Image 1 (cartoon, one colour):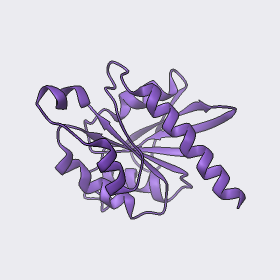
Image 2 (tube, one colour; image 1 turned 60 degrees about the vertical axis):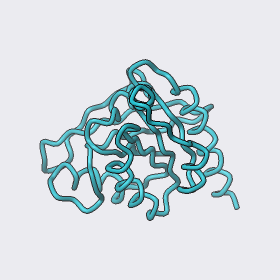
Image 3 (cartoon, one colour; image 1 turned 120 degrees about the horizontal axis):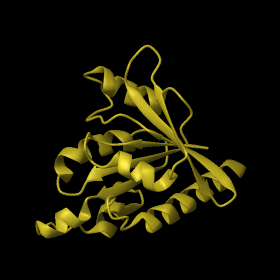
Image 4 (cartoon, rainbow, N blue to C red; image 1 turned 30 degrees about the vertical axis):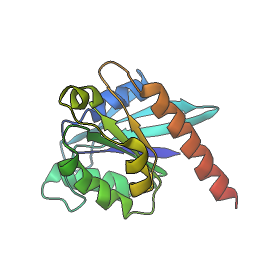
Amino acid sequence: MRAVLMGNPNVGKSVIFNRLTGVRVIVSNYPGTTIEYTEGIMKVGEERLKIVDAPGTYSLIPSDKAEEVASDLLLKKETDLIINVVDATNLERNLYLTLQLREIDIPMILDLNMIDVARRRGIEINIPALSKLLGVPVVSTVAVSGEGITQLHQIIRETILRIKNADKI
């Protein structure tokens, strides 16, 4: 199974990636470019989930080579799960990509990263309401400290089980 970490530049995707995969990391160049992406493995029960850290992008309609690579990594290879990492302090800008990702028929988890900074700025996010509105599981994290990573692991496990059970039907 394969999951792709998607999000705007500088939202903490790579730190989330490192938290999920540990040291099992492979850095690759996208064919025909010098743009790097990273792949690693996360254990989900007895399963091995390949996780791809795509370059940051603002849209699935590419305006530069990095955005084209991110879109290709998501859409041109079999992807079982999208983990959309957003900056909790700047939801308006980040949710543009989120809404585009929701239009794709791939299960998704929304990770509100940097929730600590949002809290310090007085930003309150109603996570259950946002989850219901978007129709996806939502988790809040602080990638640099590890806050919320255990919950993100749990939601990934539950989502993978739902995907596998749906495939059996």
